[in-house]
Amino acid sequence: MTQDIPPKDRAEWAELVQGQHKMDKFVLQLQVDKVQKGVEAGDMTQEEAVNYLYEYFAKYPKGFVSDLKAVFRAW
Image (tube, rainbow, N blue to C red; front, top):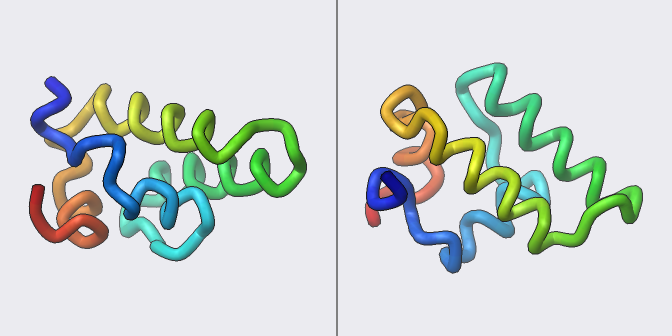
């Protein structure tokens, strides 16, 4: 249910990829670090990184609500 997470066109997704936000849940921070390093190494584009994180959050939106609200505030 993608309405459970913020739309992919929000600037905060790109900010996550750039490492501007830290996640409370360790497993989420690992995913953010993974895509950030991938972009820095040239292994993925920022768009691919945003898509990866978006899909990851979409799998378990209710488990990640606190982290989403900390970054996105409301949607």
